[in-house]
Length: 161
Length: 320
Image (cartoon, rainbow over all chains, first blue to last red; front, side, top):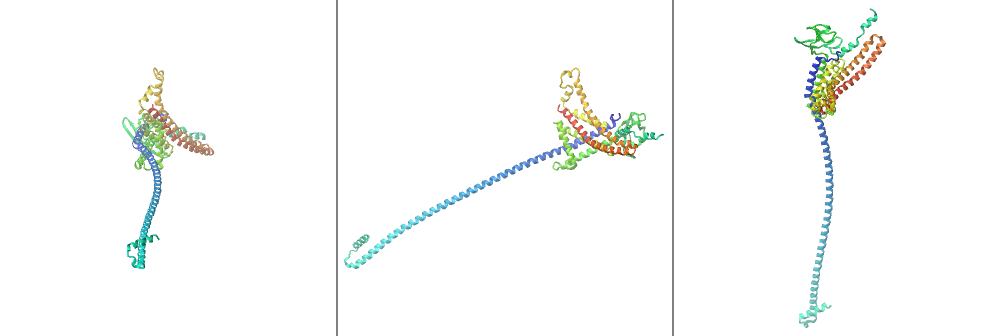
């Protein structure tokens, strides 16, 4: 059968051209393509990984900022309460101080009034004594020579009034 | 001469017509009258003879050569003594082979240039994407799956052989130039493919593989006085590529024969009256469409089968 016997001419050309094609493609064709495909695969995998990491980082940042916000709020609250307490304390202290100083002033005023009153009373007494003495002098006249004795007598009389 | 005899004379010799189409020729018929003459290269004791095949048309004799019309070398160029010179003419099949090689090289090297230019930053689309899917499939799902460790050495070969067979099969289905030659249905072509597979299987195999052939791990009486198992294993070395050769050749050739035979129905029934002729023509066309679809499938399947079997044989040899 003609069909079952390989023709040497075709065999020769087939060997030659298949060899050349194989050499060309195996050297310049397929390795380049396969390398590029694998590189792209790696690139895609890496991109996915880094996107995932970025997402995680973003979530972390979100959580961190939330935490920070909460912390700040708490701190702010604490500061406000502290300030309020301090204010109250200061106000109280001031009030107390004011009260104290007012009391002191009042006391001092009272004391000075007391002394003034006593002084005034004493002066009044002296005046009254002198007046009485003068009156008595005028009334009694010459009889009352010893002035000191008379004064004492009058003072005693007045305090006994 | 009676009318009946005339009809018989006109009748077509279907089998010779089919075998003429299946075989090789020194020229490329496109339609009746349009023939591409191809260069004949003949090497004999005097040196190289180079001429176009139209010099030998209709049994003409040129430089002492003519195309044998009968005998052992029917259809081939022989000298006056009826002997074959060393004939490396660019026949129809050789030209088809060159076309396949040019298509393969330009497509794959073009792809490689695309990848060099665009690197891994751009996703391919269209034809490049399709070829990438094929190449990636051959690399990962055929070569890596079957061979395993060290598959990178073999995957360019597997890709070349797959794409070569596929391109040849598909071109063979196109009935007009630049297709139409019966390349993978020619035993010389499939034999060369199988020969390269044989080299890929055996020439890179580790020592354990050859030990497994010549001193296999079987009871001693199967190999000691009479080397039964080693003989079987040794024959197995050659049956593998032989089966590859015959499977591809027979499948593609059978497909071509069926399509040609179905087409011939039209001409055979042409003399049997108009009703018969018309109905048989319709049947023939329908069957031809069906067979061409089937052959399209077979073109892919046979290329895939050849590749996956070669990959498996390589894998078996590598992982012995």
